[in-house]
Length: 459
Image 1 (spheres, helix red, strand yellow):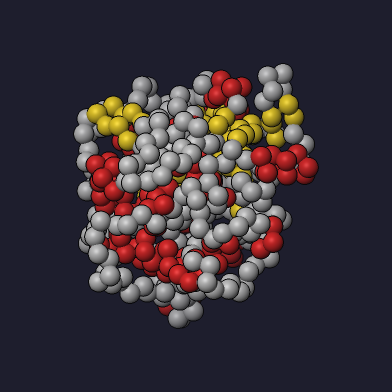
Image 2: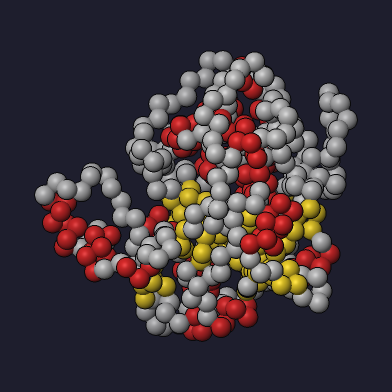
């Protein structure tokens, strides 16, 4: 890094048309160190426990002066990581098509947490399991050492062009947007898509990477493939920044890598969740907000509780067990890739709510996985959040009881997009979440989930 002191990029508002309207009074209010904030706090006008929504990010002011590390961070624990490529049909199961995440059993899962120098494990992309990429996209990605990745599935968004990019980052980074066929057609109908001589499709700086044959029934679970398995989609990449499809990145990618990885010698960085630190509180919020079937979330959490995961408290070595996963900054080391594989395997086996699995993987690795969980107020300053073009929903999200899952109950409050999103028959996913339908090798009847403190109405 250069000798210049880092400057702070100001926080930015999240909605269109608001970026230029932030006056000095609101800036002072967002800063918890300001005199205005302190005065109002002393008068009792600031709710206790309230955290600042946005704050300045201490970045190096000139991306051209950022020194990129030479070589790679050495692998000290896991040195060689390979992947299961062919699905294994277990003896007690009837033959079926290969699953993208494989037919894992409980023994596979348990073995994957035992760290060794050489490891082979499931990590998606089972042969003939779906999410195939076109040869032109595979060849293009081979040249990409630095990647900004994103994804849009189920046609509920269009790509948003990053802002404040330096000429250096424009040359250095590949901007790769994973899409399914539904989203590709939707994007073509709403924005200009340019096609190059090699068949590559572009929306501005984003190259659209089509994943044919979506591997899962549930669009949210499909979206976890490029998000968590970025290193599998683009195996030649050394550094990646993932941002959700509804976001417009507002900070230069080189400044992000310097701030969140290189400065502290980290290989993985993710934001702390705004409201929750305990997985069990996040699960409670997911049920209240109808993010997935309530009985399946409870079963997921009972397994974690049985396996020893305690609620987060200040004695834990981690800042929080719950991330805000819409932005992930990574160097693709063996250990970082292993963590991503284990994280994805939980999403494949259980619920697609990846925030529920993150802290569990940290727990199972016993503190050996080092990562930087940065303040949520900085997370909110990295992007402009655009509203989805339409609501994204599927039938499984509205289930409240086992009777409904078994087809014996009716479902009310179906949501705006019920008809479009629920055309398929049946409520149970056939290719994901199978760990919730495979008998667990222990009796969970006596497991009691910890009480969840509801710290936010929105959470």
